[in-house]
Length: 218
Figure (spheres, one colour):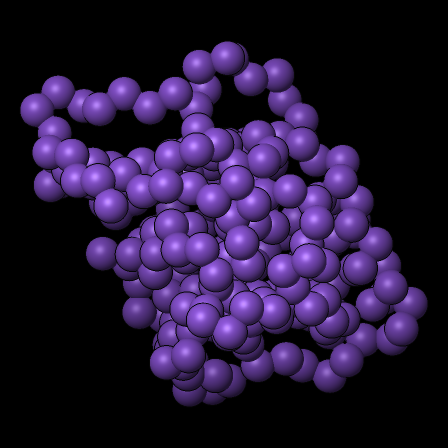
């Protein structure tokens, strides 16, 4: 399934991603991107919206899309989220601040994993973790492409599944993320219809094991 890459990224403590960067933007744009990241992680305590995820290989003219999926998300810092794939397969990644549940509908199987409170240096830390990103990442300014200002985050931990994470902002809004692993595989995420700090029901992140599902605890 094409969503396995992100599922692993969200579940594994210690990740990041790298990409091919274009020419660096002017310093003023870079500073603006840094400010937008800081504003996002400190002021957006919760959010919900939609995402599209693409797996690609290669760069430039040799780049090709190997898989596309989409769905919805909702989160509340720190460590509470529901990341739901709806196309082409249904899968749910949900965390209540202590435990991460991965539900595969086709297999009718739930995998439970202990969730680190800070989510470590994973891509999930940017969206769902605390606001202390500089503790886990080296933050570096990136380019401006198609009106989106990019940042590059490199995890300080050495035992990471990915190399770096690219984060794109536009007018204060999180637009995209780019994750590249050590094998040259890249995951591209684009976000839409994002609502910042919505009112969320108390049971939003409470997971219930579907009837008849097998449960695997790791």
